[in-house]
Length: 80
Image (cartoon, rainbow, N blue to C red; front, side, top):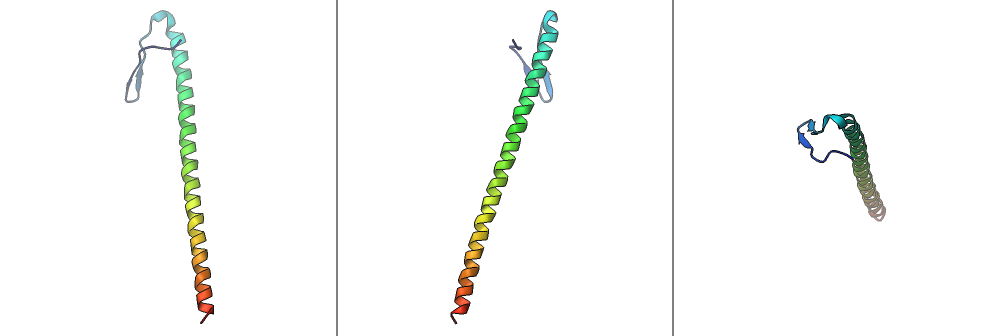
């Protein structure tokens, strides 16, 4: 079981423990930090990929609009 009371202050993480369970608590906290870092990395990557997809879709829409505009201009210039 992990620590019940923890304190975060900037980059300092404080966990009050008894001497007889220091190693177990340290191992628990280290595992928790690894898991939290992994989840955060996954979250950041997902957000980056999502924003990139949105940008690509916006560019595709703009490209389609420009092609349509060019086609209209081509048709208009050919009708004179």
